[in-house]
Image (cartoon, rainbow over all chains, first blue to last red; front, side, top):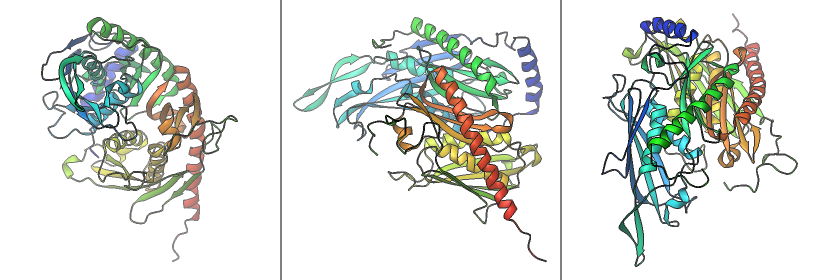
Length: 278
Length: 243
């Protein structure tokens, strides 16, 4: 039910500025419309979490931690482990975030990252089963937005995947019919690396990865994800406004190129174990 | 609900006997509730949705009111008995997210600046769910807004396209959504040929996406026609009280 105020008066002036620059292929921070902000990825920063990653995209900063528990599988999938994604927009990240349970923006972020990982087929959930129908691994992927300077979607997915890729999962063995934790750990194999790119539209032009000043004045924005094979793995139009169909072809082409860029950066920075199918 | 052996048979028909590009039987009725300012009932096969609108009315709490336009609130909600396994009471994360994207689609076409300081409240109740509840809800909500006399640039018409057994289909039912490879809800403002809601759950190639969008456009044209017919029907039947 919550309502997010859309545009203040200065935003109208700012919109014209951003739009006029866009007509000349320029942006307020000097980037090209199709240029992402610099991405940095740090992993395994925390010891209490099984996996962790701190990702920044420009000055937007996201911290993701992985916690692993044992639990019972879903009755309709007795041989599969499960994972859940939660996201919190921390009050220290922006004046527009308030303390309390996740509001609709936090819920949307968590669900977009969840869908990207699930539908991208990133994890082989069958490998997270310990005793069929009884005990499986439950992986909690918890995302915290630490600093919000526009576009928390793309760096959140990068940090979730980086934390998954570097997580050390405790190995269990069955001793006398009982599960016992061993001293050993294993890494998760990732089947695929889907990434998203946030696209902002102004008039008949668009830009990628808006920073805060831009995000506030966009006519409409969308998050689109693609995997290494060029399949679309996620779409979420996440603001009011209309997208003309004629713009979609060029947007998709750009998204595929930009997710490729993110993927190359990810593979450089993160020691990831890819399943042979990837 | 068990997984059928296949979702498209050898003659190219779907589990419920439809062709890939065929909509389910659609029913629409405008002005079904008394107390709300506008309302509508929309049925797509087994999916049944009621939507109602209150407002423009004074915004509550008052500090939420905006000086230059009305606020639009939207609640998409499923009744506990609308699904096979009883849905717990209250809002799930899914419902919170769908309320947001539905509200954003409606905000796009509504002239909120006509009603500064007011609120317009849209309530969508899914009575029975058989796939496509957000698109059916959105279709119903835009009818309810029109019924309430709220000025809009266009109606919003919505439908999902998806992929099952490798084939693109229009207007997914629950089985197709659950066991298919992709589900892509699309809502448009048909007059402007523009997209006002777009989501994808699943995987599609770029080519499938483009063909899917064209398929959705085709379905939306028909839904839009039915919406206008339903609105006209209510107002042509309206007779002023005798003096």
